[in-house]
Amino acid sequence: QGLKDAIGKYCLIGAAINQWQSDGQVPEADALTDKHFNCAVAENCMKPESLAPAEGIFDFRVADKFVSYCEQHKLKVIGHCLVWHSQAPDWWFTNGYAASPASKEVLKARLIKHIKTVVGHYKGQVLGWDVVNEAIEDNGSFRNSHYYRLLGEEFIEIAFRAAHEADPDAELYYNDYSMGQPAKREAVCKLVKKLKAKGLRIDGVGMQSHNGLDYPNLAEYEKSIDAFAACGVKVMITELDMNVLPNPEGFGGADIAQNFELQKRFNPYTEGLPAAKQKEVDQRWLDLFKIYYKHRDQISRINLWGVSDGGSWLNGWPIKGRTNYPLLFDRQYKEKPVINEIIKLYK
Ligand code: G3I
Image (cartoon, rainbow, N blue to C red; front, side, top):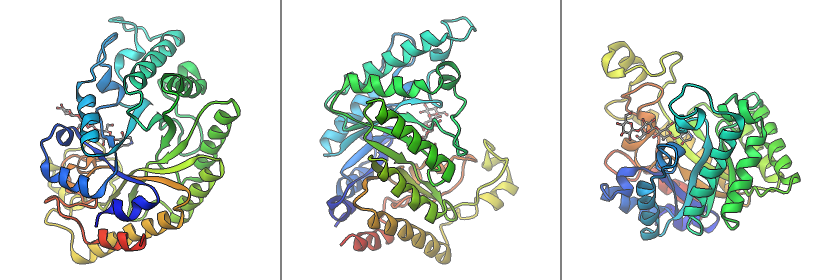
C-alpha cells in the first residue's frame, strides 16, 4: 500500500520532481512515485528563470518533458511558479543591455506576457498554478521585491488576472513559507479576502512547510490551516520536508566540505541518523500528519519537496555539502518505516 491509497481518499499527495527524474534518469524514484503519489510539482524547470532565459525567448523543453512524465505516471500537474522574487530572469528588471532599471510599465507588460504565454502553453494540462510565491514577510509586510517596489501590491492582482485569462479552468494559488507566523497568517488572509472582493479567482493557499524538529510551533501552524480555510480557499501543504540538522546562524553559503569545524557542528549525521534521533524525527512526522488528518476536510493537497533524501535541496542549504534526512525515502530509495505509521493514521 502506498501513501496515495490511504491519503488519496481525502486529498492529493505528491512530490516535487527534479529534472534528473523527469528526464528518465532515476528509475528508483519512478517506482516510488508510481506507488505513492498522484500529483507532482516541478522542483525548478517551470520557474521564470528556466522558462524565459532572454527577452522574446521561451524555452519549454525541460518543462514539457516534466509534463509528459506526469502524464505517463498519472500525476496531476501543479505549476510552480509564475511570480517569485527569486529565480526570476535578470532581464525582467533591466532595459536590454543598459544598466538602467525597467520602468513600471515595462515590468508590468513583461509579467503579463510571461504569465499568459506560460499558462497558455500548458492550458488544460496543469490543474493549478502557484501564481505568486513568497510576497509577504513573516512580520506581515509586503516583501520589498522588484515587483513591489515598481508596481506596489497591485502586482499580485495583475498576476492572478493574467493567469485566469490564460486558462479560466486552472486553479490559482498563493504560496508562502512560515505560514504559522501569526502576522503572516493575518496578512495572507487579508490578501485572499481582498482578491476575492475584487472578483479575482483564488482557489487555494499553499503552506510550504519547510519544517524542522522544533519549528513551526504546531499550535500556530494549525491555527493557520483553520484561518485560511475560513477565508473560503483550499489549504495545501505544498513543500513539505523536515530539516533534521542544526540551523546555523550566519553561515549561509559556506562550503562545509572545506571546513572541519563546520562539519562537526552542522553536519553531525554523515553516517546515518542514530536510533534516538530517528525516533524524534519519526515522531515529528507523525505529529504533522496527525494535524493533516484532523484537518482532512480543509486540506486538498499534501506535497513533499522532493522524493529521496539524496536529492533534497536541504543538503545544500543554508550550508553547502551537508548530509540531511528531510524526506520519507532514504538515499537508497527505501521507504522509511514511518510511512506505514502515516498510512495507519488515514485508515
Ligand atoms: O541546474 C543548475 C546547474 O546547471 C548548475 O551547474 C548549478 C550550479 O549552481 O546549478 C543548478 O541549478 C540549481 C538548481 O537548484 C538545480 O539543482 C540552482 O543553482 C539552485 O539555486 C536551485 O535551487 C532551487 C531553489 O529553489 C532556488 O531558489 C532548489 O533546487 C529548489 O528546491 C528550491 O525550491 C524552493 C521553491 O521553489 C520555493 N520555496 C522554497 C524552496 C526551497 O528553497
